[in-house]
Image 1 (cartoon, rainbow, N blue to C red):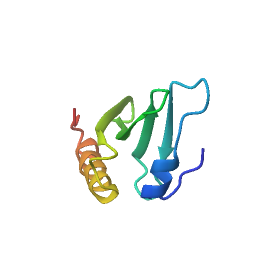
Image 2 (image 1 turned 30 degrees about the vertical axis):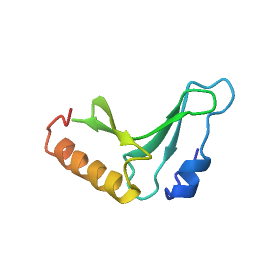
Image 3 (image 1 turned 45 degrees about the vertical axis):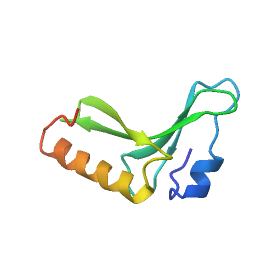
Image 4 (image 1 turned 180 degrees about the vertical axis):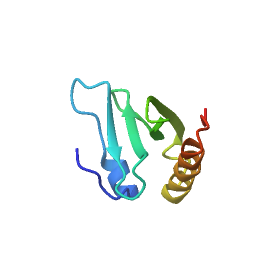
Length: 93
């Protein structure tokens, strides 16, 4: 899936494909930021996640928080903060 500018409407409309366990909607502005949707049924869970590589080797994926509790600018700011740590060789976990 191509990267898109995250908006409240896009996040609300984002859903799992049938048979999928999880799906990601990647942000075009902050490349390490995505919304992950999990759980089938009437109330799927949507959360902002950060994903990057530590020292160009180890993949790091961290849940930032519920997409209903965090604003998009807050999630982008947190992803940026975590990427600064990664760039310094610090594991943000």
